[in-house]
Length: 508
Image 1: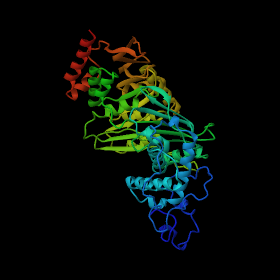
Image 2: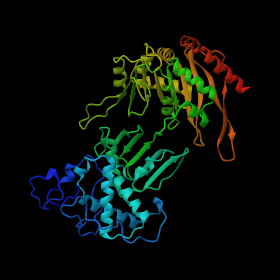
Image 3: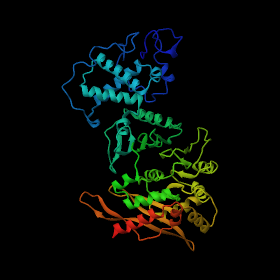
Image 4: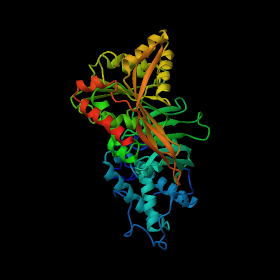
């Protein structure tokens, strides 16, 4: 079925006679499944796959899939693989590409395609008489399947749920973040072209591209994980790929309590804030957990509300049934067709939203979001890069000024006070842990100054012998928050009072 040579090899080659004249045309016709399938560095292999018989669906195999195995060798880590392993992989990969028909492979589901590749690779190893142990052969089979069907060396990292970030700085340099700490990763790309091909495969799935003419690209994986690619010539040492991974199991506020990110009383307060349709801005630095916290808060939105999300790359994973997801679009080759975040937010207002959620506010779209919050779309949310609630308010003012709005400063601040109800501050501490450090209400104005009040803060008290930060969440003593009337409107005033009382009790 998948042999290239034979009387009825490929439907797309009809008319070429059944001869062996052209083994090369189909890579151009079989683009979909395998951008990684660039011919590797040519090794001295005279005829990669003379073995596949003319009419056999796979190369004629010997009874045993592997020749005499070497003495049992333990599975090696990637760092222990020597150059001979990569040389063998390159040769087997080249023989596979010469043997298999990619256009036929694209018609199979993932499991069937993987089985076909494994069978052919086993046969190639047997025919070429490579001396490999069972463990080495399994490693090679898995690597080649990942190269053809997946994201190559990235696959084992993407499969791990304990990794938060994957950072590729070139074909020979990779790092991961585990438990808040960055460490080297034991993976290696064959060459710079394979790394770029993997990046092109990732971004092409969301209709984007990365090459010399468009070397910067934001994209996402199927699970919503955020991807950034910057390619040469901008990246001097080779393509740089950064993936912010999302956990397969979506985090909840209860899990954040277990992690120590928030106290149980603070989690109850956040539930009430999400339930009573407060306008919320989540503030924090890079990697502080803003998007995770936004996902947690959206779980407390009623199922009958119409929610519209606007993002640069779709990451939010809302559980409600009535959700419309919108995503920005970069310009095309001619520099036209760009759809900005501001375009999406403005269009949202014509779509009868009940809540508007902006994944990340970076520029003048903040003004349109504030206008939406102030015109009947209560419960709207967004995230902003800032290091404190007070700095968050200053950032909002700065972004409005970036949009060219010539408004008096007092007017801008009045718009902010009339729009934003609560600022939730997230932080990533120096030990790698993430904490919610402030839950702050925007109360009003005195003169030209915006007045805020903290409902809960996180106090750092030191560190233990292992370097872990020790601290606790405490109440600031506010007995009646400014959101009290809103909570009473939604019959949540008793829960709110109980949460505030319990914060006081725990502190004392």
